[in-house]
Image (cartoon, rainbow, N blue to C red):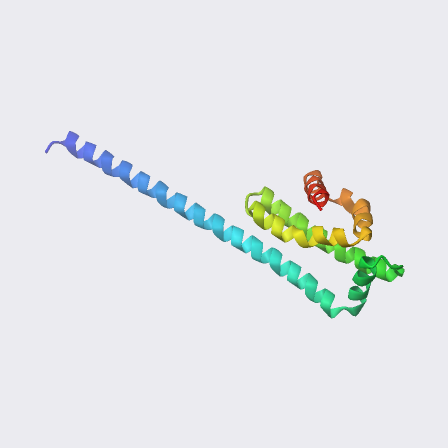
Amino acid sequence: MNWDAVGAIGEVVGAFAVVCSLIYLGYQLRQNTRTAEVTAYQEMVRRIAELRQVMLGSPELAQALNKAMREEEMSNDEKRRYEVYLHCMLMNADAAFFQHQKGILPWERLIALTQPLVRHFGYTRRAHLVWSNRQDEYIPDFRQFLEKQLSKK
């Protein structure tokens, strides 16, 4: 066997090693993407659960939410509690939307995470009032997304 044959074999082995490395890299990227999706979704679910736990542990907030949904007159403190609650829901939806834009959260998960907020808008006109006063705090893409979701209800 001459050196040309050894060189050719070396090139074939090297090319095969590069292909194997690329396949492995692709597999690792796919696994990392899946892990990021799961982590992002779990974090959003955790945030929503924390918000609900606060609501359950706060009779004042629960009363404010009930009054908002029954369209009853609210005190200034109740309005403030309700607005803070709704703003937290909006921030969670905005964070989920951001993760979707970055390719971390799939569309189906984004919709699932934002549905409680969208449903809430269907229960009370006060949510629309708060949104109209605070929507400028959010980026145009998120505002467009939320308005589209709200128009479906």
